[in-house]
Picture 1 (spheres, rainbow, N blue to C red):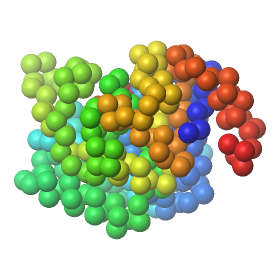
Picture 2 (picture 1 turned 45 degrees about the horizontal axis):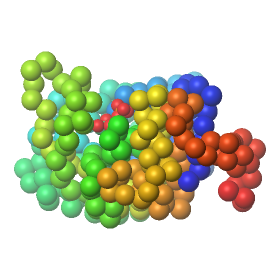
Picture 3 (picture 1 turned 30 degrees about the vertical axis):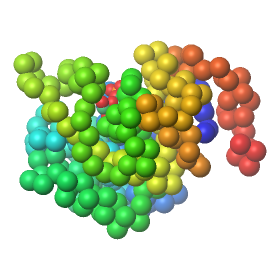
Length: 260
Ligand SMILES: O=P(O)(O)OC[C@H]1O[C@](O)(CO)[C@@H](O)[C@@H]1O
């Protein structure tokens, strides 16, 4: 794992956005795996700015989002379809036909999961998978005890995930019980995984992911198996790591990747 600890939250967000921008510049037809959640909002704002101010083009990019709530139509304000159009797709030059999320309102969600997995394969796989991390260690909606080799499927959401996402739903509205999510095996198949975590509330789970045992109870720890995983943190999210000085020694600016 390449652990990058940035001084401020804004620095961490800018670094993660910069990694995505460099990927798209190096390969304009890149296949990006995208994530949602509050952590990603400033990152997508940075990509919007790079598009508007610096001409960063997404015209040839294809995207696959990690997950969607079962039962929500794309027009639902709390759906991830809605989120992605709102915060990114409607503001850049991407071809909407090349943007993909699992359909939460599919008549047959099991068939939808299989078709989504096949669509990713037919696009040639994912070049860069962006990830957030839930306070319970989930990546995508792979809740604790998810199979580390799982593929896109339906998962039951935990109470803590419900609590974290309650603010995105209308008062009194019942939250979806299930989500369609890329599996941990699907995520590990991406050629590069980039996880962004910011804020002290994520510190303990970040330490479990990086320095804890590989364990299904912390799904993000599966990234320990990935040959090219970059973890981008601010100081607060990195505050309970034990090996901080080592990460600084090896992975900060100027380090030669050949020696990582
Ligand atoms: O960035 P946040 O809002 O803390 O969310 C973290 C993770 O939780 C989710 O929002 C799902 O609960 C993911 O989409 C995200 O990666």
